[in-house]
Structure formats: structure tokens, C-alpha cells
Image (cartoon, rainbow over all chains, first blue to last red; front, side, top):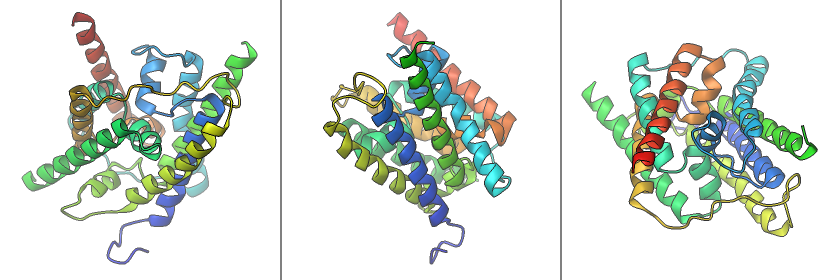
Amino acid sequence: MLPGFPHAEPLAGLAGGILIGLAAAVMLLGSGRIAGVSGIFARATGVASSSLPRVAAWAFVLGLPVGALVIMALNGPLTPSFMSLPWIAVAGLVVGVGTRLGSGCTSGHGVCGVSRLSPRSLVATLTFMATGIATVAIVNALN
Amino acid sequence: MPQKLTSEALVALVSGVLFGAGLALGGMTDPARVRGFLDLFGNWDPTLAFVMGGAVLVMAAAWLIQPRMIHPLFTNVFSLPKVRDITPRLVIGAGLFGIGWGLAGLCPGPGIAALVIEPVSAAVFVATMLIGMVLVRLFEKDA
């Protein structure tokens, strides 16, 4: 599909990205809000307060697996490859702490903020891309 | 439920479903693919660049429409981030988030969406992410 990258799926990636962009656009133009998953999850669970009604926060959070189910119904089962559970647990903790301190994740900063050219989001996105790339490089080197 | 609350919850649900579908279609619910994208110095998989690119392009169009609207379609005001300063907290948080993202190949959206794909692994991720978020909140209360 993509010369030099036999495992890449650029068309599916682009289509998925367009859906994510539409999702964020619906949130912005419909409700006037940023579709930032970590923030909305924090709002839903009561960790953070915001003007977003809690029922709306839960509607968004529960919509995520529903959307994945729709794709599985249309495209057939997904065959992901997850890391081991202890590894995931450590990562989850770090992601939870990091997204609260950094006020966002790949969606709020990476999609909504970068497309708005927000300086904070540009800095955050460059930072988490850099540490993510470094982490994978170190882990792969150790293995 | 009051009409405004209902419409906000519906907007959030539509956004969440689109978001989850985009994540699954774009391959972001497969940690191996995400880690492949972060493996810039190894066996790089550029798929996620297409996901991010598609999402940012669509959302950039939404940001062009937004200033021309008096208010969002279903609410009275735009509730958008007003903080502009780039703080150590932002950079440290984003840096930590990137480490967790690289360790497990999961960020908050795909972690939640994957609850219907790989339930045990995703539940461990979501639960530990919540613990991390609560930890930040506890620390902030003490500070």
C-alpha cells in the first residue's frame, strides 16, 4: 500500500482520522467544547469538575466503545496485540498522572489544540511525541 | 431531562461514537500499531501519521467555521480553554503521558474504546489511569 512500509494502512488511517476530526468538530460546533478524552473521562468519573454536564461526559465516554463495536460489526473482528498486564498497569498510572498534569492527551492537545495552532498544545504534543518515541526506542533496545 | 441537557448529551454521544469508530478504523486500538508509529528509529509504521493528519485537517476546518458562529448549535456559549501560558507542569505532564503512551501503546481514547475489543487489558488500563488521575487530585488538595 505504502512503498517501503508493508504494514502501514494509510487509507484506513486517513479514514479513521477523518472520523476523529468529525467527532471533534461535532463537539466544537455542536456543544462549543473540546473533545479531549482524558478531560471528559475525568469529568465523567468525578475527578475533575467542568461546565460539561456529567451525563454528557458519560455519553461521550460510553460512545467510544460503541463506535469501536460499529467498526467491528462492519469490518469484522479486530486483532490487536496488547502488552502484558503489569506493563499496562504501570503505563495506565503514568498516563493518568500525565494527562491531569498536562491538561490533555492525544485528542485534546494532539487533534483539537494542534489544529487550532494553540501554543500550549503544540508544546504538549511535541513533548509527548518525543517522550513516546524515546520510550519505545529504549524499551526495544533493552529487549 | 431539560431539553438543553438532552441535546448536549446527544451531541456528546454522537461525538463519542464517531471518535471510537475513527480510533478503531485507524488502527489506534491496536497497541502494536501505536508502538510501531512511535518506533521511529526502528521498524516505523506511519499509519498513525495519516490518522493524526486526517483528524487535524478536518478539525482545522471546524476552527475556521467556529469564529463565524454566534454560539454553538445546541448550547449558548463556546467553553474553550483560555489558559495560554506554557508551564513546567504542562511539559512534565505531557512528557509523562508520552512515556505511558509508549510503554503500553495506549492513550485514553483507545484504552476506553478497547474495552469491547480486549476487555481485561483495557479495563486494567482504564482503572490504573483513573487511579493516576485521582493521585494528582489528592496531591493538589494537599498542596
